Image (tube, rainbow, N blue to C red):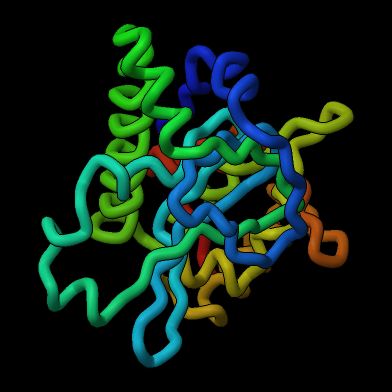
Length: 222
């Protein structure tokens, strides 16, 4: 996926207020814009039935909450607005700079070059949503899961670790797989010594093997 850190981050930090939020809470952006300095957030859609599904993640260095100020709500189909609700949820503990809408767009107006920030942010989000859609439409379960393991694992102490927020349930929802299917695939990866699971923590032991699975050079049974 496409992860380009926002340009002029120091400028946006300078006009924002830094606030820390715990994991598993709705980010109270309201009419503001947020710059994510540390942690992982997700855009989730909540239906009238209470179903909650994340379809886009934000990593450190991303902007959030600006789209509603560019596209008025009345430009969306009324049927969609009434049936679903989008919200930004913290997946880990996060540090954000909350920027007032007026200050954010005021900075853009005083220096038009900063509009590159919105272009890159929009392109990044579109690219990630399209890649996610391609996973769901074209790839089998092992490829989806290995792609996610490679995408979101982070290097720590010489070992790639998947953040604890990516539980089997989280992976199942994001990848449109049954939780049992996710469990079976992860078990096969563990038995092949491609990953190691310590409690809820997943360690990537053989990235090359996961890459081969994604590239269809290696198959696993589950």
